[in-house]
Amino acid sequence: MTTASKVKCPKCVKNAAAITCEGCSSKLCRGCYNDHRQQLSKELDQFVYEHDMLKQQLETPNENEPHHLLKQIDEWKKDSINKINQLADQCQADVNQLLDKNKDQLINKFRKITNEARKGQKDDDYDERDLKMWMTQLKELKDELIKQSNICIAVDKQQSAWIKRIKVQEASPQQGNAEDSK
Ligand SMILES: [Zn+2]
Ligand SMILES: [Zn+2]
Image (cartoon, rainbow, N blue to C red; front, side):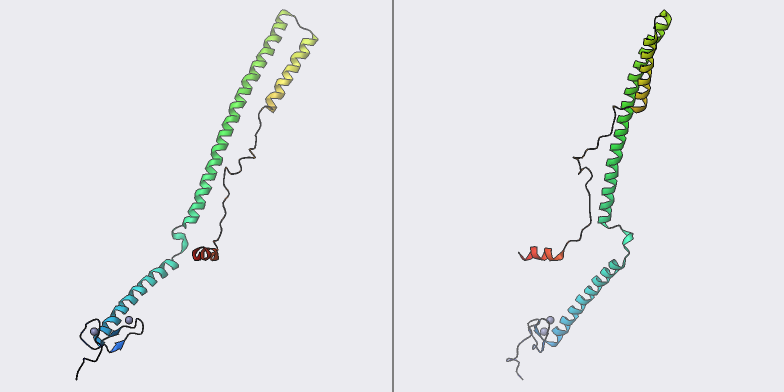
């Protein structure tokens, strides 16, 4: 019998191409077709391996490794708290400094009254007007020591972005596709 009229297998270029693979439409001889199936079987094994790996990843609980978005929120929190702590420390240091400065000034005024009163007493050179004045000055100093009215807290209404607000949002997949098709 002659094989001249038969199409030869393109793989081995020897045997007749007897079987057609439906998947890729190659016409192969029986032996090469078996090899072809074997190759597909190896690829299926690879798929099963990748599939099982992904399954394992999906089934691993989230708390093992915090998601990077959770880390990002935590970073923002630490950053913001640091900023607040630093500014609060700075402002408290400023208040303490101003209170010390105020007290120094009050002590100076107080000494002046003390000296005037002592001198008046020593020289026996004072009357009701001096006494009234010293009492008034003393009361003013006492009030000022309690009130410290030259210091106050100013809120900066302009600087709203000093700590940036964050929020979590879900990207819409429709928008992504619209961008791709352009
Ligand atoms: Zn095939
Ligand atoms: Zn062949």
